[in-house]
Amino acid sequence: MKEFNSDTSQKLLAATLKMISLKGYLGTTTREIANAAGVTEVTLFRHFGSKENLFEEMLNRYSFLPELRELLPELENNSFDYKNGLIIIGTRFIETLKERKSLVRIMTCEIQVYPEKIKVVHSRFIDKMINLLADYFSIRQKKGLLRKFQSEIAARAFLGMIFSFFHVEEIVKGRDMGKNEMKRTINEFVNIFTDGTLRGDQR
Image (cartoon, rainbow, N blue to C red; front, side, top):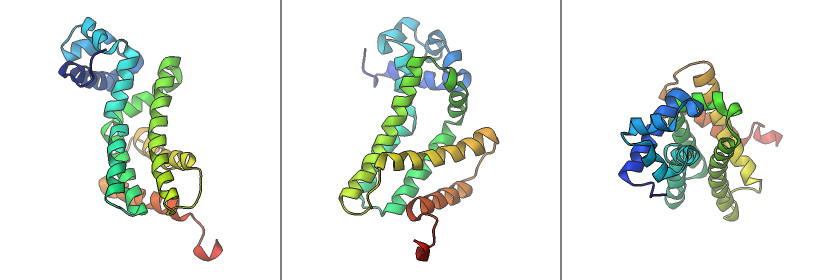
């Protein structure tokens, strides 16, 4: 398999994002992806080997995963306080979901009927994001900045509540949330996540 950073690979990945956002994984053929990229189907297989590999690399390239991977060290190096760091993570996450709304919509519809290989790819992609954020929590725990808790569960909870909110409002209800609403929502989620819901004198 060739490097994913070649011009041809980039065209194929962009075409995959476009076609799957329009027709879904199940409804898109490798021939359609190759045509959209302006290459032959043989070239597609030469670069990626299979449709599954192409789908996985598309998720690795165009999802929130690469941004989160770059963002966390930046937050650590610039010593953002905990709340502000989570607000930045949450805001970037929901912005990415909005940018990829068509892809999110069709994937959530298809997920139950995906072939087992694709379910594994999707699960592995989600686990990568969760593990990255869990490591961020663990590092702050080791520094004594956070109390002890299961960092993986916390990461699932934080990303999960944002995704669930986006899915209900934008996918199920068909709304188009504005920046101010997203900002207020993320701030409230972060406050609940970091401070809990009990009053200080009731803890």
